[in-house]
Amino acid sequence: MASGQLFSKQTQALFYNYKQLPIQRMLDFDFLCGREIPSVAGIINPGSEGFQKLFFGQEEIAIPVHSSIKEACKAHPTADVFINFASFRSAFASSMDALKQPTIRVIAIIAEGVPEGDTKKLIAYARANNKVIIGPATVGGIQAGAFKIGDTAGTLENIVESKLYRPGSVGFVSKSGGMSNELYRIISRTTDGIYEGIAIGGDVFPGSTLSDHVLRYQNIPQIKMVVVLGELGGRDEYSLVEALKQGRVTKPVVAWVSGTCARLFKSEVQFGHAGAKSGGDMESAQAKNSALQGAGALVPTSFEGLEPLIKETYTNLVEQGVIIPIPDFQPPPVPQDLNAAIKAGKVRAPTHIISTICDDRGEEATYAGVRMSALFEADKGVGDVISLLWFKRSLPSYCTKFIEMCIMLCADHGPCVSGAHNTIVTARAGKDLVSCLVSGLLTIGPRFGGAIDDAARYFKDACDKALTPYDYVEAMKKKGIRVPGIGHRIKSADNKDKRVELLINYGRTYFPSVKYLEYALQVEKYTLTKANNLVLNVDGCIGSLFLDLLVSSAMFTQQEIDEIVEIGYLNGLFVLARTIGLIGHTFDQKRLKQPLYRHPWEDVLYTK
Image 1 (tube, rainbow, N blue to C red):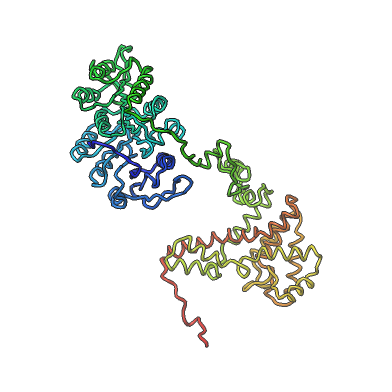
Image 2: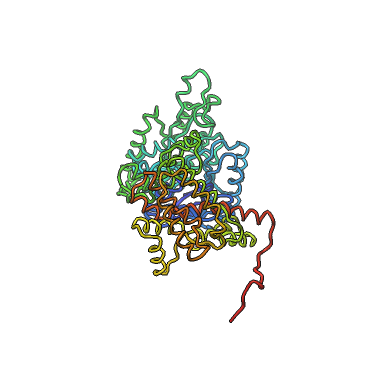
């Protein structure tokens, strides 16, 4: 066991099993104390590597994450404290691994319920190698103004109230982490505060004992008096009794063993800690308090008497000149986290994303305010989902059926079109699904599948202006613009596109009005006088019919219709539909195990 001070303002730790809040509390304490370097040098998360972002005051820092204890110790050779937040199941293996690292000097084991046999092995190894274990079942320890372990001392408010941001003159040791917080407050009210505080843990076999730490305090000049808080159960306090009797501890020791109320119960009582139960008269709180008092410790008659006794002892030492009270000062304010400040109503913060189409915060996600389950209850389909997520309203069934028709008819158009070709080549190169899909989608544009918006835009403008098909087509020709939605590489007046025929029949049958479709067909009639393949293609048909849907449904304002066309909603239909086919081509090529594609040189014109 170490014979003096465990921590300093330069102490750094390795934190095992990442927990954001305890680490951030350590870093906030560092800032409060004016440390120049963070007390957490590295984090160990088995199987993970990289960095974790945390705050050191106002500065955001990246703390390295290592996959093993050995790697972390090698990367941070000056970090000599190991804070183990592993579960009780793995605490032994990780603690033993850390103890065997030459750079590790102190280990804090936070977990409760570590098997006693495992704890004994850890204790034996630590004592044989002059290392210190705090715990198991501990909150840790603290050196005021220098270093703290994990959640020791609780919140920043408690730390400030307890004056833990600067060293005092009192050494404190306890079994209980929760009661430590209470004693830190009591000691700060009655003295100039603690210099160091340790919670050894409440298990039956703690890695270090009350007397281990009191004997250390005897060798730390800055500590002028000691406060000890024990509890019933076990015989740890008797080793302190022996140290006092032998004169190994000469500094004033104020002690109290809690659990005196146990005698009021007829049967044995198990208090909160595994070790907090009396196994006989000698393990009772009364017997321990009596023994400590007999050995020279200052023991009150009750817990209520502990605070005035600490104050009296401290005052006597000040009067004797043993203690020169350490002056207090106002610590720097630790910046508050944004979420906490917002919750407290101290700041307003703008959001970074706006969403009006979906809300996933409740028990069930909603699409434009409609519960997902309601869609199934009403036997709705993909067209209804698109109407909610794209248009933010429930469109009539003939509209949603039209949307589904567009998706079905445009899902694929064979392996020879540019999008499918690109996807097939990419799939045969062994690429993943997303890469194959994207390679095909990126070909969509004015010349392939991306003319729906332009067709709708130009047909609408010409129709609204009452231009004749002749005036419209010739005006486009003068501008050097091909008429969007007109023309096909294969289809012609003699070889009609069946998809277009299906859409025209559906629109004329179910839509209240097909004004824009009829105008597009009049344009086709004129363009066919120029060439047999200048037919209304599927892009032009969908574009004109979608205009009719938007207008005749009476569910959209003119401004909304213009915005829908301008943003690119209609091309979105083709992208969504063709995604189905491109995925199909990807799976087809992979299923067929096709080799890498190389274009035949016979199909290339080589020229200068």
